[in-house]
Image (cartoon, rainbow, N blue to C red; front, side, top):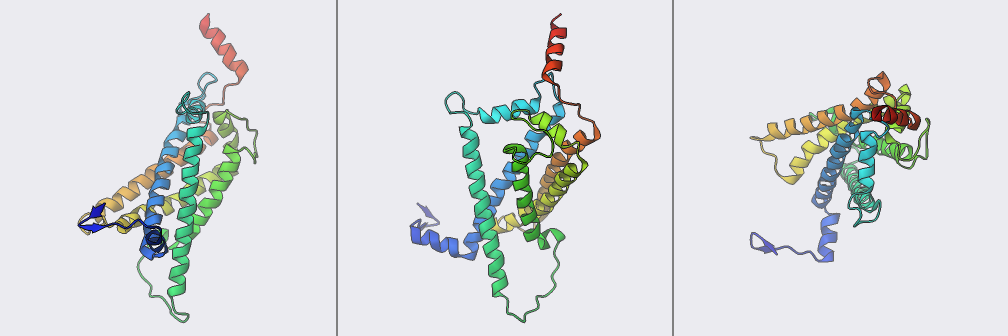
Length: 257
């Protein structure tokens, strides 16, 4: 395989050299960042199923969660596709965190001890990338333990009742505050990551930088608003209470008469 007449060497020692190089780490950070951003957007869109409400005891959000667990059924075993997705995402997250930390340390080590860096014009998002990244990682662990494994449950939670679990959790103002605050931090991190990713990929250009900046901002705003909307709607009472099995049976019986 060749590019512009030059063969690409995929031998292990070449890949190791690429991994150890600064530009190689930047490419890994960019690619894994795009993968994680794509998941974040898809996850936000899935969460918006909550807006459809509890239904008649079979909420759209619950059906969506069931769909994720049964993708490829009956050809694939239950949960297999979901676990493949999780493994890919965990791998991308570990690689992303590893190379970003290595790049940060490499930049710090390259500075002379008495060197005072020149003040350059930069955004708050750019200056706080390490901090927002760390806080987002802490939040992700909290989120998984609360809603995926149900290990921590400040409110009552049950397997398979995603809508009811979310409704109960987001009646607590401090849980809503944690989630809304986390997505704001995500917005800062994501906006700069998408913009800087275009530079790493080499697709930035003075003639089209305006487009990439606006694209990053638009994707970020939609993602932040979409994520913050669901807990806010639950907390304000705009979304109704989950329908219990007894209520669902009553509704079903009433509709059949």
